[in-house]
Image (cartoon, rainbow, N blue to C red; front, side):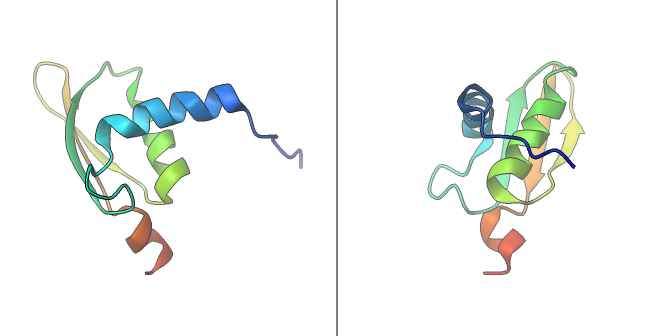
Length: 80
């Protein structure tokens, strides 16, 4: 098994995506956001949410390129 090293560019891209949906009062709380993204961008957003919170998002496609994004967030994922 090969260990992946930390990649600052990858981290920054994940942070940019995560900031689009993160709870504005506390990033560790649940996520309930709507974003406009292409179908190709959505997997990277899901990876970013998992990376920062450990929770798996539920992503529902709406009309007009909008997506409803929900996730438990960090506190629930770690059992706090």
